Length: 322
Image (tube, rainbow, N blue to C red):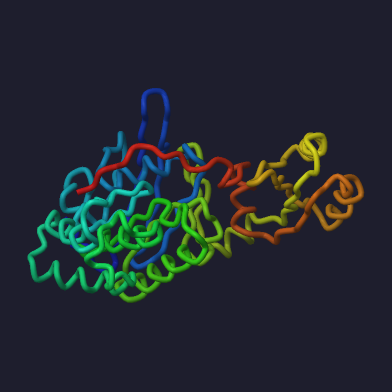
């Protein structure tokens, strides 16, 4: 069994497939994540993200192919693999009846950390996420942002090599989201931690080392934000029609139009004259119009034909993890 040395990928996935009845959730998926990098896995709902993460977290088994965590086969050695992983699920999994300290202490006991290591690590993690003054507070009294920070601290208690974050900032205000990403960057830089994140806030992953877009169970593209924007990005018109009739007319006129958030329509700019043509035909029927330069959002639209926030993430079952 590999010892997870510096040259070993943090994650290695080779030709992994997974089927649920007639649905092929993962179709010959292969990818590699370097140690110490921040890796964003993006895809519409039902694209296969959760199925892949469940396999990497040893919650489910692939039907074919293999997956390794720091050189450890997740099927053959699941317990060893889990010790290298920290997980922050989309759904809250804290025990709200316990205190901040008790939640972290219990997690350390589950991972068989001795008392001295638990105390040391609790102090370190609470300092990192700025919750030291709240160590004795009952979790149900904390704000949603503080609870999310506590969940990140808990996921890091046992000093994992890889941290999985499933929608880590969903439902948080802009300031809380920015704080969480600041903590994560500190961790990655200081501890060579590999971070795997899924999110519907596509602007949050613009500073990630690698972006991987998955749809219909297949990897569509992998690369740095800059290379993906250069290869697949386009300018977008972000328009808000005044009336349902204007909405319908725009969709008919621009067949590739994608429904965005809050009644907006996202229209790809085909050439330099596209803006003039749009305004000449629809200017008086638009409540608002703006132009977005090539971005990860336009990359996602070009490759999937959908908006990442087209539908809010569904609250599903809470996946367990020891």
